[in-house]
Amino acid sequence: MALWVATMFSDDINSDPVVLVGGGFAGLTTALSLSRHQDRPKIVLIEPRDKFVFVPLLYELLSDELNSWEIAPSYDSLIEDRGIVLIKDKVKSIKTNKMQVITESGLELNYSKVLISTGAKPNDYGIKGVAEHALKFHCLRDVELLRELINDLRGTIKALPNSLVIVGGSFSGIELACKLSDLLDQTIDIHLIESGDRLLPQGKSFNQEQSEKALIHRGIRIHLRTEVLEITADKVHARTSDDMKSHDFVLQHRGLIWTAGSKAVFPEILPSPSLKNGKISIDSSLNLIGYKNIMAAGDVCSVQGIICPATAQVAIKQGELVARNLINSMKGIDPKAFEFNDQGEMLSLGIGEASITAWGFTISGPLGFHIRRITYLVKMLDKALGIRSASSWLLGFKKNVFYENNQLNSDSN
Ligand SMILES: Cc1cc2nc3c(=O)[nH]c(=O)nc-3n(C[C@H](O)[C@H](O)[C@H](O)COP(=O)(O)OP(=O)(O)OC[C@H]3O[C@@H](n4cnc5c(N)ncnc54)[C@H](O)[C@@H]3O)c2cc1C
Image (cartoon, rainbow, N blue to C red; front, side, top):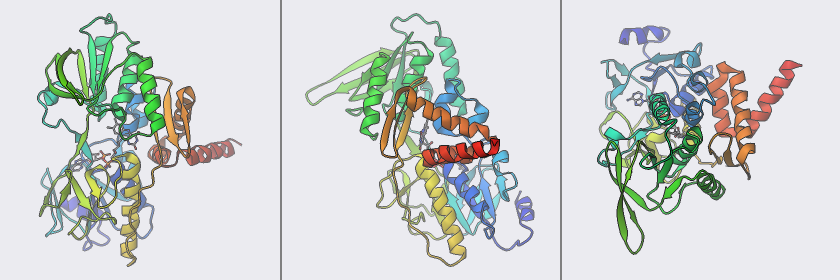
C-alpha cells in the first residue's frame, strides 16, 4: 500500500502529502476545495466507507421521498479526475512526533500536514440497554433497520402497549417522530422523550413553535424534563422531574430510537491533545492547540472561544477554510481565522411539511416543503455535481436555487 501511494506521487516523491483523515462533510470539502487549485499539495483522503452520506437527507430516504443513489454517491464518483488519492481504510493512530499516520490495515504514511475530520457518533451516555436495544439514526444501515421496524409495525392496530419511543427532542428526534407518524398513518402511539424543559433547545423560536404544532397535530406524546434510566427489549424506564418532585414510569415499546446526543470519535493521537467536552481543542485557525502541522474540522473538534453547533454547515465552512489556509501556507501567507456565521436552519416536519428559518425570513408547512423539493430537484438534475449542489444548498440555499435555475433556463434555451 505504501509503495502504491508513493507511486501515485512519483513526480516528487520526497514531499509528503496532506493527509485528510475522514471523508465526511469537513474532510471531503477540504479535499475537493484543494483539488480546485492548480498549485496544490498532494492530497490523500483516508476513509473506510465506500459512499459519502448526505446525512441531513436521511429522513427523506426513510420516507422514500429520495433514493439512496441521490443522497449517498460513491467516493470514487465524487473524486474522479480530481487528483485525490483515496485510501479505503481507517486511521488507527497519528504519531505527531514522526508526522506519521498509521491505519488499521498497517499502512504507515508520512504527512506534511494532517487534518482530523472523523466526525461524531451517537452517545449512549452509558445508560443501560441503549447499545443493545435502541435503534440509531446516523447512517444508511440505520435507515434499513428502521425500515424493517416500520414494515413490522404497519397494520398494527392502535392499542397500548404498541408504542414507538424516540429519545431526544432536538432536530433528529422531532423530524423522525413526524416522519414515522406519517409513515405509520398514526396507527401507533409515538412518545418523544426530552430531558430539557423544551423541545429543540438550540433551535430558532419559529422552528420550535412549528415543531411543537406538528407534533401535537400528529398526537405525538411529548415527555419533557424526562430522563431515560434503562432500556430493555420492550420497555423503557424513565423519570420525569420538576422543581417539587419526580416520578418514575415505565413505557412498553415496540421500538426505541435513540437520538439523544453524539460524541466525537477520533484515532489515537500521540501525544494526547487537549480536549473540551470530549472534542479536540483547536485554535481559530483550526490548528490543534500546542501542535504543528495538525488541524481538525467538523464535529470532532471545538474551536477555542467560539460556540458553534455541530452541523454540516459548520463542517463545510471549516473544510473550506482548511483548504484555503493550506494553500496560503504554501505561499507564506498567514492563516485566516474561522468565523461562525449562522446560515439559519430548516427541518422537515413529516411528509409534505417543513419549517425554515433562514435569510431573514421564516416559512412553514407545504411551502417550506416545496422549497426543499426544489432544492432536491436542482440537486438531482445534475448527479455528478450532487455533493456540490447539496453542499451549496446547506450553505447558500437561495443563491443555489436561483443560480441553478438560471443555468437550466439558459441551457434549455
Ligand atoms: C440524522 C441527522 C440529521 C442531520 N441534519 C443536519 C442538517 O439538516 N443540517 C446540518 O447542517 N447538519 C445536520 N446534521 C449534522 C451533520 O450531519 C454533521 O454535523 C456533519 O456530518 C459533521 O461533518 P463531519 O465532517 O465533522 O463528520 P461526518 O460527516 O460524520 O464524517 C466523518 C467521516 O470520518 C470517517 N471516519 C471516522 N473515523 C475514521 C477513522 N478513524 N479513519 C478514517 N475515517 C474515519 C467516517 O466514516 C465519516 O465518513 C445531521 C446529523 C444527523 C445524524
